[in-house]
Length: 506
Image (cartoon, rainbow, N blue to C red; front, side, top):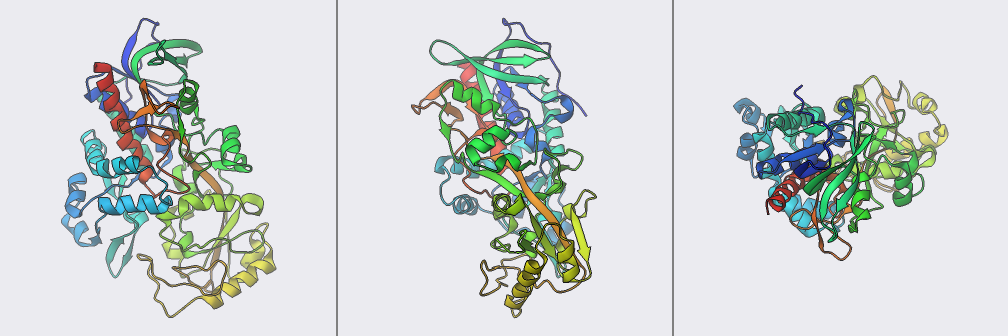
C-alpha cells in the first residue's frame, strides 16, 4: 500500500499553510481540498501507522448521498453494467428526501444550514472523491433483498466504498501520496498556538517523544469525537456509558474538541447523544480491524429482542434499520446487564446479514423454543417463553411479509407492538444472538459556520481554525440516517480544507 511521505520533525522556523489534525475520511478530504487550493499541507495522525485512519477504517464504507436516478449512480460507478441495472430497482433519493430524513430522524433539531450543506453538496463531493481514486459500488448485500428475481434498494442508502472502510482509507491515503502531502504518524496534537489577537498560528505536537511547535496559517480539526474517552462519556452521555464498547478506534478521545475549547470555541450540538448500535456481547473494548464492523448485529427488524427479564423493550420494526440502529444501542445499554438477545427462527434466518456468520459471534441455537430460552445466558426462561407465546399470538398473519418495504405486518395489543415485519417465532431451528451497546461516535462537538470556520463563544469565527467530521456539532441529535456520517465527513472535510487554503492564501 502506498503511504504518504513522512517528513522529519520541524524546527519552530518551519511553516505550513494548512495543518490537518486527524487522518480519517474527513481529515484526508480536507487535506486534498486544501492542496487543490494551492496550500502546503501537513497531516498529523495520533495513531501508529498500523492503526491509522480513524473511525472511517472501521466502517462498512456505506455513504449516503442524494441522487435523481440510475444515471447519477452510473456517473459515480461507471463499471455498473446494463445487466446489473436491469435486475435492480435503485429508485431515487432526492435532495428533498435526504433533507426530510435528516429532520425526521433528529426530531427536527439538526442545524438547517449544516443539513442543507450536507444534502446539496453530497453528490458533487462523492464525484470529487471518485476523481481522487475512491471507488464506489452498490450495497447489494446490505441494503437490498432479492424478491421475485429483482433487487430493491430501501432506506435511501445505495452506495458503499469498494473495500469498505479499509478501502476508503487506503484510496484516500494513496491520493495523499500522489499529491505529495506528508502524513506524520504517532504525532498527537496537544494544543493550538495563537497570536495576541486569538488567531490560530500553529499546533503544539508530541511526536516520537518530543514536543515541537508546527507553525501554520490555518488548522483543520478532524480528529473525531470523544467516544473512546470513558471519563468524557460518563460526564456527557451519563452513568453507564463507561461500560459501552467502542466500535472504532481507541484514539478518538476528544483531543481536537478540547484543543478548540481551550481557546474559546463554542460547544454545540447534542453533547448527551451518540450513535450507538447493537454490538456483539463479547466484542473487545475497542474495534478490531481484523473483524471490522462484523461485530454489529443489524438484522433485528426480523427478530424479537429480549432483555434479561425475558421482556421485549423496543419496536424492532419501527422503521428500516438505517433509521433506528443508531439509537437502539442506547436502549440496550439501559437494560439489566447492559445486554439483550436477538431471537430468530428458520423463516427469517436467510435474511441475516453476513455479520451473523462470523466466527467471533455470541450465539446459541436449539430445535425448540424451550431449549433456546434455557440456553440464553442470564435470561429468565419462563419470562422469555411467555413473551414469545404472547408475541406469536399477536401477529397479524393476514398481511404479507416483505423485507423491502414497510410492510405493515404488525402485532396488536403488545407494549411495545412491533409495527412491521412481525414474524412469529415458531419454526425450528431457533437462534439467539447476545448483544450489548456498541458506541460509534458522539454527537456533541464544535460550532462551525457555512465555510467550516470554528466559532467562539461570542459566535465570532476564530481566525484560522476550521473543523470537519465527527467533532462538528449540530448535525445529528439522538439518531442519524445510516451512511450520513461518512458523507458529512467528506462534505465538511472538503469544505474546511478549501476554506483553510483560501484563508492561508489571503
